[in-house]
Every structure is written in C-alpha cells, then in structure tokens.
Image 1 (cartoon, rainbow, N blue to C red):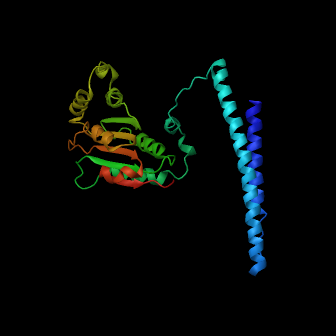
Image 2 (spheres, rainbow, N blue to C red):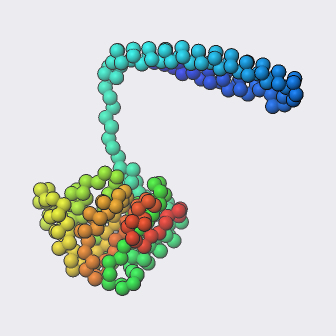
Length: 259
C-alpha cells in the first residue's frame, strides 16, 4: 500500500514537471533570423525535455507492473473478507418524501391530475400520460405525489417500477397483489401470458389508475401495455421514462425540467 502511494506521488511529480516545462515557453518570441534560431533551440530543448519525461514514465510503468504482479502473487484481496454489497433501489426515498419538503411540485402535479382525470378526446377511452426527463429530476417523486392525490377516485390503483432489467413476471404479479395477495397469491408458476390474461380479466369492467415507473425499453412497455384493456371506463396510466422513448410510446407527454 505504501509503495502504491509513493508511485502515485511520483506520477503526479512527472505530470507537474511536464506542465511546468510547457508553461515556461515564451509567448513573445522575436521574429526573423533571430526568431528562427530561437525556435530551433526551443524545439531541441522541448525534445530533450519530452525524452527525459518519456524515460521517467517508462521506469514508473515498470514499477507499477511489478507492484501489480506482487499484489496478485500475494493474493491481498483474499486476506481480508469482502464487505457484502446490498443493492438498494435509488427510487425508494421518492416514495417517502414528505410533501412539505417538495418545493414547486404543485404546478406539475395539478397539471398531471387534470390530464389523468379529465382525459383527452373521448373521455371514456383509456388515457395514457408520460413524464419524460433525465435521471434525477424527480419523475418518481412527482408520479408518487399524483398517485397519492388520486386515492379514492378509481376502482383500482397500482404503482410498479420497471427498471433497466425488469423481471416481467414479478412486475405483473405485483400488479395483481396490490389488489389482493390472498386472491392472486398462488401465481408463482404462471407465465407472462397467464398473468396478463388474469389482469385483463380483472380490469375489464373497472376504472383503474396504474403508475408504471422508470420504463427503459419499448419492448418492456409493449409487454406491460398488453395487460391493460381499453374498457371505456375512463381509466388512466401514468408512466415515467427517459426522453429517448417519448416518440415511441405515442403518449401525451410532459417534459419534466424541474419543479
């Protein structure tokens, strides 16, 4: 460890020396024959400096390779237990953010609620709205706020997250279990088609509101979309996604810049 630290210091010193040698060049060089001679001498000096630095880098490279080989030979990593890595969903805090801490969310939230409840075109049709924006802008927080505010206005609600590598069976089972785990709990052996058919049958005569958070691919969206029938009950779907998918989803879109 000490040797690696010293090597890092040596590398930093070489970089500083190189930057210093470049910075010492004069910006006001004479012109004519005198200037030509000066430029030739400068080129010679630069070449010498670069050659010296190149040799230093080569020597350091040898030391770095030796240190790396020694680490592998001693198996340093095996001498200490590796800390366990527990993956935590970065979207989790968005579900429990206090409303009083959210500044400027009222405008986008109320606009979304209006779009989802008043619909567009024929009111009875399935209404799909998307929040589009880059990661970290607060799409999940905004969607959760809308989800909480619309409690009681629909026969059935569900909030599911897709992620970059979705487990489609788990996601579809989650949609069913948010209504009744007791009724749909024995679905572990079902495939995607059985789950989709069950959800469609369950929602065929219900006014539902589904939030599908963090869609990364059009294939995931097409699969999930099959589960929700257009039953002319004024149902609504709210999705959050990145900008690249907005044209493919064919949705009413709100581009989220900031609250």
